[in-house]
Image (cartoon, rainbow, N blue to C red):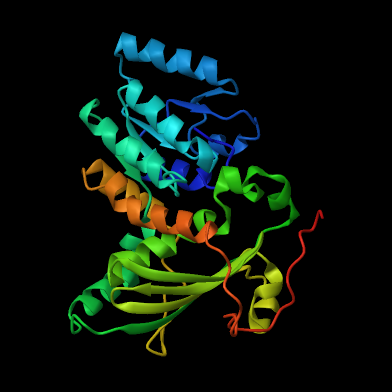
Length: 316
């Protein structure tokens, strides 16, 4: 579901590389020619009702095309509804980040566990990155009371199309913290412990920053979708994404190794080792808290490269 979406090709690739078959796909938009590169014989629907009817037909026929999993790449605010749809069709759900936008949506999904035998899986691919796994192992061996100082910068440039899509509407995407920051918040909580306090210094349509205090870390974070916030040396190249984490003034190099993480996520899910709702809950709670927190007066906002003026939405 959401076959025309930005992240859908990674799911198509993962389905193929794990030697599975895409039976049917749905998206209200029909720009889905990418499917030909993976599953040209998959049925495709632009109307949800016809997609629903098709899945029900093959479910009752119980033939070789019976649905085992439904992958969800739809807009964030629709995720919980589409997860319920998967469960009602007797399929396990594989849902892109963020699993849901609000903590109570996640809690409602947890309550469903008693009604259905199928599983809800989400994509938390940073937990599978070799460098991040090694970091977690290293931190677990440090003194239990040690507080680590961390700077996190994640910039993933987006064009003007972004501001006319659902992604720019906070009620639909959750804003920058849910849409691009959720993986990093999940990873940091997974490694350094629960949130104890957080401060937001800026929260705009194209960037956000603040300070996060976890059980074992103090984190200055900066997120951006604006190419102008890239470091100067990156601007001179064709690269439009920049990730940087320093821990106790030591750079953590993990710029590579991202391309196959969706496939590895699928491998884990197929082995029954996927990440469920409970694993996602803490980062969902944090992202929700951040976007509803009053912005604190700046005492030196964290931007690792430059003092930038407040950004202006390109369409006013």
